[in-house]
Image (cartoon, rainbow, N blue to C red):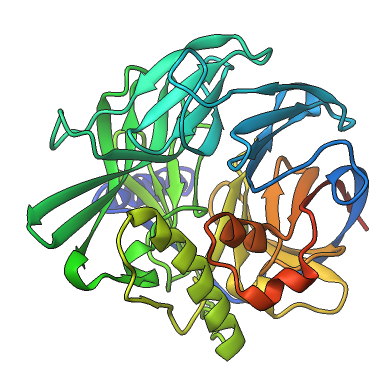
Length: 402
């Protein structure tokens, strides 16, 4: 065979094989290009003892236009809109049934049309707001299996082309004391109609003897995103470092793997996990007989998709096995799924207690005391922790390569 035609021939073979199933990208434990240290340079901060802005329970921080940020406080039912220097532009949302209002919120998202979406949990609704706070309609989330169900929950969402990629749940009662919880990673159109299912998980609870389990509630909560081409990126299993990439039509395109075991918790860490899941269980409106925490952290704790298609992945090993002075260590994958380097974020904070929100490849927001604030809002915080209770701070950092 002509040597000039050989690469084309091999490409055709590889392409043909790829159609028979997803491409598996196996990565070693160590990155191709080694480690890079990133300094956290403070840009602005709010909250704390002396700030003019007070926060109750900050659940999410997402990018806003021109380098700004939207900060969701679920306790205050407000979204703070801050500019790139941290100046308050205004607050959005409010409690109620009217335009731009919702009654329970745990997510915000940038919508395909450039507006902001505030996600109401139950019944699942997205209130749409222009950046200046002007109401822009509502998206009522419908269920494929039971179109008239009022027990459809909206948990989180991302723009996916002209549609939404969302985490939704449905509660149903097949028996007097049995509740089935279906969790979906599913795309919707902007009328709230379901399109494509990427992942489904089902858990049964005995309401007569309600024991809440961490494993039963596990889903892709912070392990999900959308690539620039519209592919859904998610980690379906808590104990496996395996990132799935699926086309908008649902076809699994590739699985990106890395050799790494999840962090094994000590007794204190397991109790912290139990307390956090007790806070989740309090939303079910039933007497909780017990909460079962797992022996390990999830292998992947969070995933961020950057504008150019790179992935920044937080793992339990990177969060827990930290060198002194590091906030955490990120794994960076190129758009093809190759593990190219680790990013050591040098700065204050503890991922077990503080929330990390990556806005872009150059900005990160740290919410101090986020775990305690969430448990406090649900009245599940330990009594002895009230002595050292501190106000939540929201701190924006510039990421600077050293």
